[in-house]
Image (cartoon, rainbow, N blue to C red):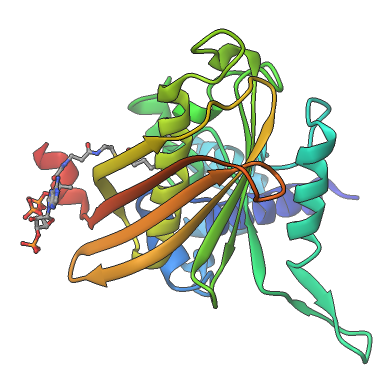
Length: 270
Ligand SMILES: CCCCCCCCCC(=O)SCCNC(=O)CCNC(=O)[C@H](O)C(C)(C)COP(=O)(O)OP(=O)(O)OC[C@H]1O[C@@H](n2cnc3c(N)ncnc32)[C@H](O)[C@@H]1OP(=O)(O)O
């Protein structure tokens, strides 16, 4: 494969990454449009050209920036236990289904890729992320050791307006001995509800999170988070979530969240 084809393929991967990651802003709009809008229009034109055709080094840098392959943290890795893999397979197999005619088509679920640099991979700020907040990393994806902290994968179902997350809690998340820290549980709940609300309504921020801890979660275990839309009222999206064992029979935690739609202005105003 030629250098150009390799670069082009990497660019396409980066575009795919942008299109689906649950970032707060650009991707919020993408998600709420049902993954249909064209990222291509939002990319700098030069990303579609081979690097050597660029006439200045800034353009070349932009191309190389975009062509770096981000790691998708939502894909299986060696730290995943059997429960994590089984549930991943269960939902992943419903993302693409085969018709009787043998054609492949979208199923009811979509897996959401997950990256550790929102500004770079989700909002298209490849160069910007070098200049500002270059060390910023998504909290839940900030620990490099596989399986040590938050291992999770999310799937959304547009028709049922549901989101599920398969979550394996690593040893760095300890609270009470042998069990998961309540703050870590709140973090994964906020992540799941926030991602779901973003998918439903575009860019949002949490304004209220209410959590009832019913049963402790053993460290190292895998649990299932199921988020549902309760209602939408103007800028407000109300969602709720249950954290259960992998069979869905034992309730560990339940929560409700209120998310308010925001603009970039909201953030800059502070
Ligand atoms: C890339 C992967 C993504 C992973 C997802 C991770 C998700 C993580 C999400 C987060 O953790 S966000 C971080 C924590 N949240 C914040 O820091 C938000 C801080 N709050 C704010 O900045 C402002 O409240 C905000 C900009 C969100 C809204 O302020 P505004 O002045 O624009 O709105 P306003 O205060 O008028 O509220 C809008 C509506 O929400 C209602 N509201 C606001 N706060 C409320 C509250 N706490 N409880 C109940 N209702 C509330 C408010 O009454 C009003 O209702 P009505 O429209 O019916 O009048």
